[in-house]
Structures are given as C-alpha cells and as structure tokens.
Image 1 (cartoon, rainbow, N blue to C red):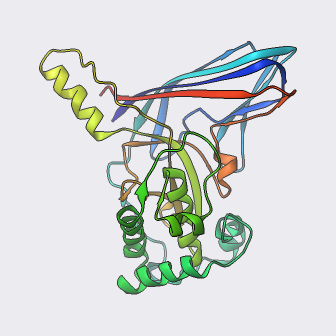
Image 2: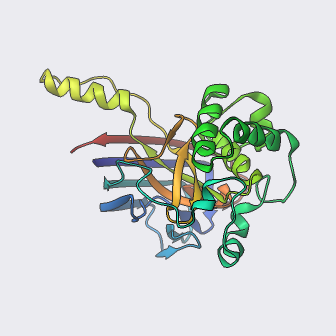
Length: 301
C-alpha cells in the first residue's frame, strides 16, 4: 500500500522568544514493515543549523538550532511511504517455549531489553490493578503469548473509551485503567505496562494510521467522479510494540483492537513515550505559546 502523508505543526508565541534546540521526530522510519519513498521537511524560520540523527531505537530525528528571536515556528512535512506488512503474524518464534507465559528471553537479549521491561512508565513500581488485568487476560487465554497479546489489545479496546486530547504527556497506565478512557497514547501506555507485568518487553510508538472510513469516502468519490468535500479530521496516532524472538518488534493498537499491519506508519519508538514525541523543544522568555497541528493521510496506490 502506498500512502501520502502531510503533517504540520504551527507554534505561535505571544511575544518574540529565543528558541532552544528543537528535536523533530517526523521522518517515517525505514524497516521491514515500511519504506519511505520520499520525505520533505520545511521549517520557518530557517534554522541556523540542521542535523539528521539516529537515536537509540533507530528513530530518525532532525535537530534544529535557531538564531535570534522569533514569534512563531512552523514545521511542515510531506512523505510518501510504502507499507509492506499485510500479515502482522508472518513469522515463527525462535523458541517454541516463548509461546507460553511467562516468557523466557535469552540472558543477553533480556539484558539489552531492560528498559523495555520496567513497569509503570519506567520507574520500576508495581501496580497491582494492572498486574491483575494481565493475569486475568493470561488465564483467559491459557498463558498463550500470542493469544495474550491479541486478547489484551481487544480487552483495552472494548473496555476503554477513546478520547481526544490535543497535547500533553500520556496519562499513567493506572489512571487510564481507572478512568476506562483515554487517548491513543494513553491506551498504548496501558498496553505497554500490562505486557511488562507478565515479562514482555514493550515500547511506545508514534506515527500515523490510515482511517478506513475516510479512505472509503475518497474511493467512493473517485468512483462517482466527484471531488469529495468531506475532510475527516485526522491526528497523529500512537500504539505499542512488543519484542518477540523470531519476530522482532511487532505492533499492536489498542485504540483499534487490532495488530498493526499496513495501515500504520511509524515515526518514532522508545521505552519512554516522551522520547517518541513528534516534537521536543523549549523557549526562553515569559511569553505564552499556542500549537496548532494538522495531519492528512491518504492512500494513493
């Protein structure tokens, strides 16, 4: 599937400010599930210096440095991405024993995955309610690793109402579970912590998702040879990935209740959701700031 993506972030400041270095994690990653055919980043004002870097999880990030004071900052990206993974379960585990819970990562691999195994947003604290949720799902699926992952995804999707919150860090897993509602990033954090509660390494992912209903509207308009005037509101999306020996990092989306396949495009991933945010920066001064964003994802082939 070939997807065209446009994403803009517009910051406005109530008075001119000094912009500190800004990290933009807006370039689609290249991996076994997707290939970026083209990518363009436009920045206003023009940065004094721009570098393209690779972080601990292989995320591409642009680091922007500015000179002088500014009352606005705009970033606009355009990308064409080919998604390759029609079947999210196209792999075999290296060790059949890993198909049962609790998982047994080889010693060296487990050491490398430590940050992805820490509970409760990485602070190591145990949350009994989330552990109880994990045990219940595991028991319902007879400790099958695959069935636990798909079952947990469906349970969160079914029991938690999806909401929209334009900005801010994700809530804690415990808070989302107690409220039985949250944004896609809140549900992803809950899913991560529930996986870690049974010993599965998990990380947070930010990116985009092709909305099936919006895609069908566009197809229908094309069949009727009409230009659609309906422009469904789209947002940055978030989900989570689990590390499976033999499968590597595999995504699950509790917002939709499904395993991640060819309708998702990943930008950034991290054990800590803050390190997968699409933009990270600060400014010096007493001004107030406002952020407006726009996302458009369209299937073109």
